[in-house]
Amino acid sequence: MTGQMAVLGAGKTGVGWAARFALMGWHVRVFDPAPKAKTRLSGAILAARACLPALYDVALPPAGAITYHDSLAEAVSGVDWVQDGLPDRLALKRKMYQAVQASLAEDAIIAARSESADADELQDCATRPEQIVTVAVEGPIWLSPNVVLQAGRKTPEPVFAKARSILQSIGMRVLVAPDPVPLLAGLSPETAVAVLRTLKARNADGIGAMLAAHEVALAPAMPDMSAPPVTLDRQVPPDWVDYNGHMNETHYLTAFSNATDRLLLWAGMDAECIAAGQSVFSVETHLRHLGEVDIGDQITVTTRVLDGGGKRLHLWHEMRRGADLVATGEQMLLHVDLATRRPAAPPERVGRFFAGVAAAHAALPPPDGLGRAVGQPR
Image (cartoon, rainbow, N blue to C red; front, side, top):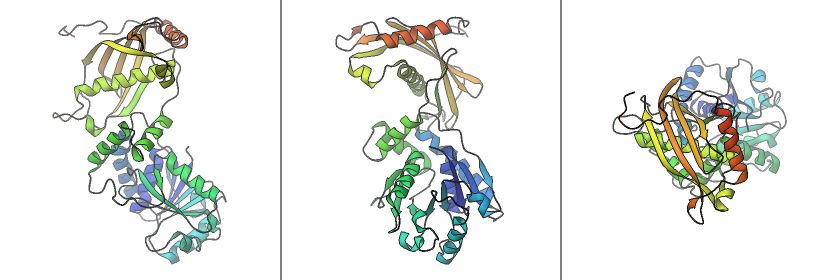
């Protein structure tokens, strides 16, 4: 889910929400006459880009546009979500909410925040109180997995459900009360990312399961397979670093393995297929390291099918940082019957997919480095 949101006030809270929504593909409209509003938001976007994409093993949506508006009516017209980033003064909020609602669609959400007033008091500020909910986040808004969402006595269930759905779509776990012990309290962004990635990998209840489910929702659909498709597009996370300060060699294999898994999913080798006893085993892999990759770099992998359709699956991966080729991976896999643990013909739809893709890629020239052995000169 993406849409348009407006931020009222580009203080610490406002820019945090703006960065979170923007990196999840939302068009962000900013209303704040302060001269430093753009500078504050630019800093928040940079901080968010350094950590939020690293939570995921897939690319985030293309970042949404950010526009600045001198007119409140222009800023909120047509948006789905209005985020309150105003100072915590009830008289100011009352004035602003009423002005906002003069130009705001009736089905939009106003997400209020206050440490001194509850949802009922904030609703009493408004012409249409049913549009208002409250949100609260511990820690950096662009990274925190938890948000406390509360309704007032005048909040109808459909409004609350819409607010919950929007927050979940930007990768947040919606709570009705704060966690007793904030998960990320006192952690640096790099450590926080590592903790959250560990929870996601374990698909742990709560935060881990939420992040894993959101990653599935962000996963790319199958592209045109006539050319080697992009099978991985992601930011290099902090926990992939080694003692040299760049991506550790083991994670090149992790990246290529993830690329293979994406291709297998497109082919139909999904959880249902594996549960039925059909899978693939890797039998040989050869990696070449051609360039350095740093933490925070965006990397992509394209995958070519050299042979497929029968028991063997021969793949060629190329990893790039921007336009630079930084690694290749040649991989041989076998389709296996999990009951016998022996090579077997793949399921018909899987075999048909790989035979078709291999035929489409066959006209391409042989990739440089195919079939190399360790120690051969480049």
